[in-house]
Length: 527
Image (cartoon, rainbow, N blue to C red; front, side, top):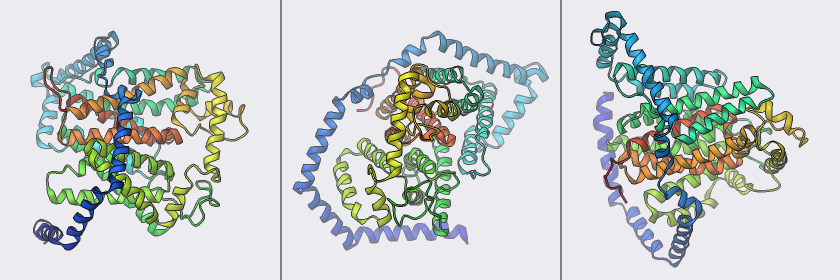
């Protein structure tokens, strides 16, 4: 009965509804309104201004940086460091293959390898991408009271070991460091330096474990995702995690969340309800995860081949959008708006002026609590805004003395020194750029920014040479990172390590997609 309903009744009803919409008077009215709107003076004025902004962006330093062909990959491919790492990975896989062949002194007759191959043939769905996806579900849906951040390091180590064993069993190339890129290696070195300069080494090692887990996750997903099919499978798991977490947030709103004065200036946001946080500790942390992952899962949903599944999956995206609004995270709202603008720029530039106008016209229609929250963005009457400015001032004073080498990783190294420059309590600088600079010095901030823009540049190049889900995912990744550029200026998003893990998983998937979408030598790129 259920099968008949899903396969026959629901598709038939969807076809009938689509036909009614196509023939309805409302559709004809909307088409007429759109035609009149696009022919108006207001629309042409906005489009003219938009084209000028685009021209300025292309001619700017950042525009030239993203459009210029990348040279660090070619430099890195020929370096001794890359050769050393690649040789180490090859040696490890050969050693694992030899160990697996010991029972019968021959790889072809190995009982271990034979068992692994038979299991892989029988349970085709239980592949490495499934293990990665299951890991993502555990990490993203585990309630905060049951989650410990050190679990991520254990999961990352297990996935890396499984990837190396898989390379040995399937006799395929091991992970190459070229796919990760030289800037990430430099940033990883900066985190190690952050241990060396720390006065509290135990605190620095604790935080370094989170960075190590992030780097391992990034490397695992770069090595695991070698084609679009595998990318789609990982994105499917991400979609489940994002929508289920959003459903939990919606249930929280229905049941009621008490307003917390430690999270919101209640005098400047009178009448605002409690902020949802789903399975995480803090509404800001949850909103940051949505900003990072929502564009990517949108790319998966809208490129599903089955039309009905595409409609259902796209409708499910309403949940994380609603959850993001209910977090009342202003910086995340601005970030997702920037991400949407960048996404539309790459997908269809022509609709951007209309999108901006419609977004502005929709502001007065927002619920009063959300509208009041929007109006407090940048307000000096909001204590949380002024608190950030106060912290940034103290951190800048601190960097005059410690900016070269950094203080070391973690709040335990940041706070004691910061208190010498300010009388306010702040475990971090409320900004990724200042925090990386303060903890890891000049090497940290420079390598991080180079890694960030190198990832963006590789993804933009991948957009030009790919199609289908890969192209749309790379567009989504660029959109997320564009939004996070702003978000990182208002929040230290890595203070909650699960956000850090999501950031490096996303950049790893982007590196993988850009890598397998690179055209072969002599193949012309798409314009």
